[in-house]
Image (cartoon, rainbow, N blue to C red; front, side, top):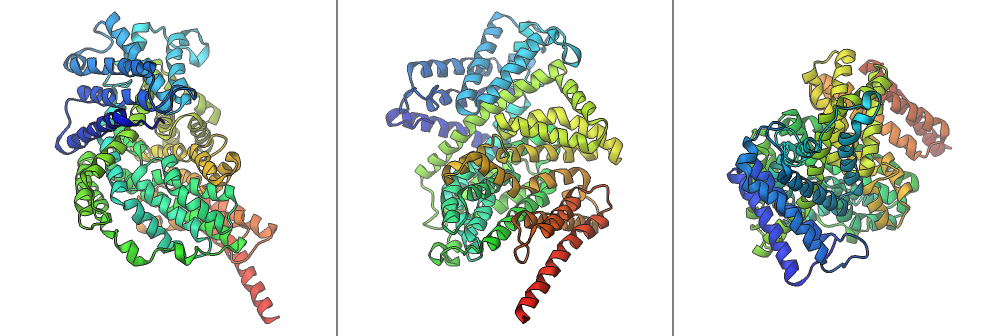
Length: 636
């Protein structure tokens, strides 16, 4: 990204701050008409991307070129037209009213500029996926078998991709949810960072875990989880916390690739951590019509288990290597932590409003105002007008790439639904699974991880949900006996988890690659370590389907049993991989622990009591053996 200076830097900062400020105002006082709002959202956030992101490595790094200015102007035109004609767009009969040459020209302009902005600022892979989706609409009638579609005219293709706000495309519901709820939550996260809440999280993590073996790694896990409530972006989370934690981990003895893997796994989990779970969770609420508060409640135990598994893996790794705690000079005293403790009040305000069923955008608006007010209570957190403008501008910088990635995802979804590819591709996966729910889930898991190689978490989840959720509901209803309504949220959470952890899994793992760059390690080996530290993402993902108690459904004893199974299984698996439980272990006890842990986590053919007994026995045998060995040494 370019660093713009002088009058242009000030102008772009002011533009983004004003745009974010408008979204914040609407979050508290009500949004304008939906089509106008979506047009405004794209009109203010797409053009700056051409000024901030160069087209090529050889492009000027300190200023936009004339071509960049032309791209920005072209990107503004179709969205301004939609704002002016919002009433006519809302009233038109989709696929019935004529879609003439002017509309086709504007559609081409909107799609092409979105593709170029996506290529520059998000991922080229997502831009190519949009192109392939449109190409499929154009040429799908030439393909054989289940891939065959009806013939679409160019007007129909452009209309479905651009101007069908009720169903999908550029101005569809996905852009609507980003322009309303997600935008206000991004602003809230930006104000959290500006107020010093990040410093509070960092100091708290160091004070809690820094004195223990492998302290820096445990600090990274706790801090990254807390930072994730602000950013919702795994890569930005890595960059923010990893710059501090990765060098500390290397200093106490962690290999560079292991340090990077720990940070990547912990940062990826930030999108799983309530109360703010990233953009994809808000999209989930929109797609399922399930209140966001209910999604947060269902995901809470899974998020805790994810971080428990990372902490357990880090602990066993540190004990096996005999690592030391952080230096006392690097550990903040509790008095220093307490200086920023008042900054947690807005987070509690947010949680309270969400649990009281206030709308997400209003809850985030009130919490943002509360953050500014609470920060005024102490000199070290007080925010001046420059800090407020900077926070709004930072929020705008975050929203702009998200705006184009979601609009591009809308085009893909429109193409999939218009052509029937959702049904066709889902049918292919179902046929390969042969009616087996475990195989269906494995195939969908692989599909999401492959999607995550080339596109960000939210678009990956959206596309996977369009394909996979109907299949999980159909097969799961037959195999498990649950109703479609009961399976709706588990199916979405299953796909959401794998879309999130795709950022840490090889061969292409954005968060792991960012951590590897900071650590000075190889990206592939770093992503492998990130995957094994984030093993809970796989176990919890499947548990959403087979163990609905993990979503706080059912009686308390059943919930506690399922949680105990997961805790014991994750402890066994992480200890087996590290080769340490209460002391270093040889191959045989490691295999015993690993098999027992995997049976506990994935042995759904067994009753819950049997799964728990297996994994507890697997833990007890090597633990007892090590205790007896230590006693023999002590008395010998």
